[in-house]
Length: 333
Image 1 (cartoon, rainbow, N blue to C red):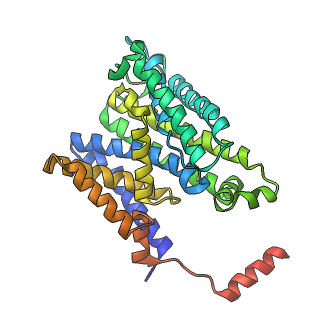
Image 2 (cartoon, one colour):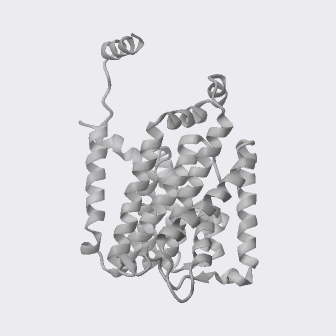
Image 3 (cartoon, rainbow, N blue to C red):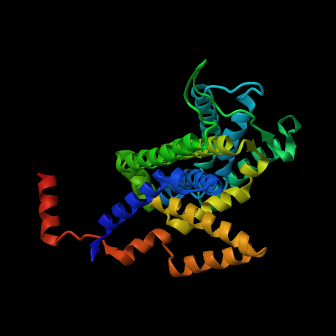
């Protein structure tokens, strides 16, 4: 049987290869659908950092997604585009600030209290934008100009071109995955995994777990804001629904459906659920029922998510006991 890690790498390369030639394969509608899936993949990976690796179940993650979109709408003039090198740092900074404030209060709690605090803050932001008529109220607000990828009169990339925008989101998806993989393989990543496994033991080792959880929360919120920024560019509209707890629940479902603690699993969950939703909507008006049945079956048959299907095709390579013992002795010496 093929080594599990080799199988995952081979599947990932094929998956990336198909996405890389997407503009040549997909019609306009499916190209937009795939862009939406990739944005959801970034959003889901950001939440997986919290749930799957740090053990923090946030029900207000959509707040950062929506805040970044609204900040882009606020900073973008109606008559002309704004440079992406101005709007992107501004929107990410706003999302990071919101995550810092919410996280500062939230990480001092745990369990159901953490869930309720994140939910409460998200709903406060939702009602603020929903009742703010200057920002479109419940109808949302349009973004008439996509950001200028350049400075002044110099345009490096034309984001009004669907193919260029597609590859920008594609590169963002790959970049986000590599960034999170690097962070999780670093000492910081080891600590937050330890917090999820046993926070009290991690504290006993001398780590300030609240500080690590806060950093993870801010990082996840900033990446969620990045996804919201890309979604706002793609659709040209931001609405209070982007901040609603329903949206947080949906992205949490993507993480669980794809496989928590895997990074690539939530991306698979985003693609699987959106493809399923698109096909069911064409088949019947009761598509929510069939979608719910599918999710229940996945949870029952694959409790570790779609990513666990890799276990059916390959097994993880095991290190012989003698080799492992030798390696430990070398590390000690």
